[in-house]
Length: 457
Image 1 (tube, one colour):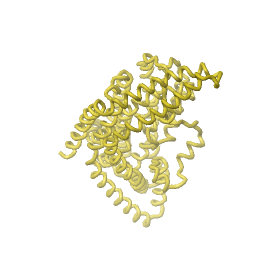
Image 2 (spheres, helix red, strand yellow):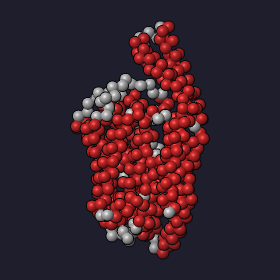
Image 3 (cartoon, helix red, strand yellow):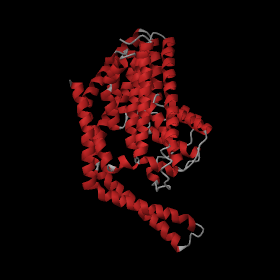
Image 4 (spheres, helix red, strand yellow):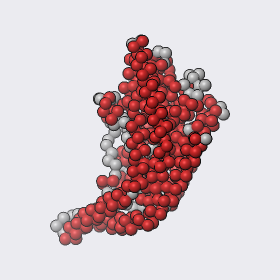
């Protein structure tokens, strides 16, 4: 009954968040948004006029345009700060919840993964389970990327946009850095475990936990004492998770109200086609994930989905799958998955298995290319998929990681970076869907590996 009530409260919070956000947008934020829109429109005009005058920087018209650009930028930043301040009452609700969840995630990943590795009988078993897990993750990643590429080419959501490059304040655009194998490797291995814990660097915590768990298992009885302590800590963290989850409806309400209050209901209609086609594509991906799960779990896959619906709603409402991690961990154990498999597979999934994020990266990158009329050959698109597959693993745990990767990929294919501004405004809505999909994908993966290992009750 309590679980059903929590689901109901979260859903009600979603609806109320939209309603209250709309009223706040109309009554409080609308004037500020109007000033920002007018200033951005003026900025576009200035940006168009400047190139024709750059030949003579002493020209009075050129100087006037430069000064006008400076003043418009200052006005935009001032109004954006004012708008954010007025929304603090909403954002603080989701911020508190997310901080509490992040407080739990890093130590829970560490203790649970150490216990999971140490409980595995031997190193060969660790390799066997890890191999099966990564094989599933690789298959899911490729399916997500290829499906995204296929559907965005089929739908062509960017073909009808035909927008000139909008003004984008450099301060609001996520800065991309060139991808290199060296950076990728350095990001995987932690220089300091304490720094990795403090920064919630899940991938680095996973690496250290694997070594720690293997070492604890290797020292025999002394290691068993340590493992029992870590098991107790894991149970304490899960109990804390139960308390924190009572705040989930408030967090979902605050997050939704802030998005709608800031962007208005217009965000739901401005890019209706793109948003609709993206969510339709996610639906197809969900069906494929569930079908793959059904192939291994049979009808129990539907029981699994019923158990994790709260975790999915939390991820959807807060736009982060990390917020659902502790709840998902608990539900998978109650579903019947072995604790050692959950402890081993789920942390790996949060680093390597971002099904929703993968589809989004393909969809968003090719959408921007279509918006500018840039045709990418099949070979170029496959190359893009390979780069996306590699770089996404290197930034696991980075806030809005999928958005960061899109910013990185555009210049590598000569796609105007200004196009990044086309998706910034609607990214929070898209992030909700991809976060929920990440939760589903990792839940099914954990259950499947448990079944393969004959560890599913």
